[in-house]
Amino acid sequence: MARDDAYPIRREAEALIRAAGLYRRERHAVLRVTGADRLDYLHRMLTRSVQGLAVGQAVYACLLNPKGRVLGDLTLWNCDDHLRLETSLEALVALRPPLERYVIADDVVFADGPPDEVAWVLAGPDALGVLVRAGLDVPVEGGFSETLWQGASVLLLRVTRRGLPCFELRAPEAVAAALEARLLATEDVQTAGPRAWAWACAQYGIPIFGRELGEDVLFNEAGLEEAITWGKGCFPGQEPVVMAKHRGHPPRCLVAVDLENETPVERGAEVRVDAASVGRVTAWAPTLAHRPARALAYIRHAEAIEGRRVQVAGAGPGTVHRIEPAETAR
Image 1 (cartoon, rainbow, N blue to C red):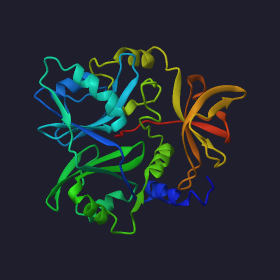
Image 2: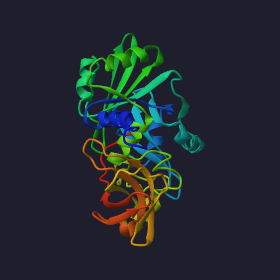
Image 3: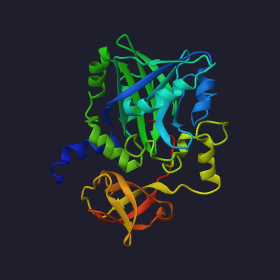
């Protein structure tokens, strides 16, 4: 893609990074979880401790298969009389059957979430000011608030995604257009499409299900430290995950590769050290907000060293950087 052709998408992505960008999520899915045992049950199933999750808090977690591979990532919101389990439609296909299958004597019921709900993410350093001007109740980090806006309930979750300030908004479709217009009422906000969001995620090393995450990926390979509580009890896949952390290492690691030119890189492009193939690219983003062009890639553990020089097929030389985990939500 020529630089001029990519300019509108670049402008959207840069707003997400250095100002405020509003991305309307596509293929968003919600499960409503009820029953007296809902917290205890999901505590046993997920990688993150949720037994002590307070009302008004949310956590990022994963569901694994017995081999420690990622069936899906999700965000769990504690809404007092129920839990909201949020993920993508693609991840829901893999997540829901095992979650329902292992409910035996537990008082837990999974049901489809609101059919008319619209989801956005508002990201960037100016996002907080936008929400204050819109009259929404802004929560603390890791928490969510509920605001009555034009007679409808609007949920707002505050998270930092590997260094990127983000707010997740949820509203009924009946007020979605009016709420979006209110958020966009100042020049500080730029709408952003799915490609711009994917570029911003690639720049920050934020993994996306179906891109960096899936059943072919081991939990430890993805570096999902922010999605696990190491001291909690058993969960599916715990043994291989703990063994890989304390008694060895995963065969490959997700890393960022800063590139020396802006040649677009296709998913699956080979990463080499000298003449040897050491990995494959999962995503690419151009130069954004003075950040160099960047690829995300899974490469062999032995080569996942900070500062390692590599060659990316079709794009030339680059430098490996380890992705530092931080509190995040899907």
